[in-house]
Length: 120
Image (cartoon, rainbow, N blue to C red; front, side, top):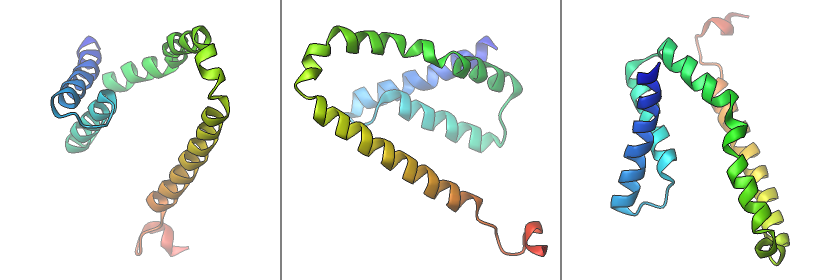
């Protein structure tokens, strides 16, 4: 399992390095996740150990937000002047995320002609 945890962090490192080298306006971890996704797509399946490691990381994901939440509370005075703008940005980005997720779900779950479900 340590190998797969190392793989996850290595993909993040490669993403960070690529962003630093090219100046691409994308977070390095996101690029690393795309790299990992591409590798898993080429492989065609997710190894059981990788599923276990990623499940453990996801189940403890809330712990990763503690430093960010603490930083917000420490610098709350800086956000006070931009509270309305931050709130509007949060609402709009949340609505956009829900809309894109819904559209992607519809597009990816559409029945294909001639599929087994079509016989009904």
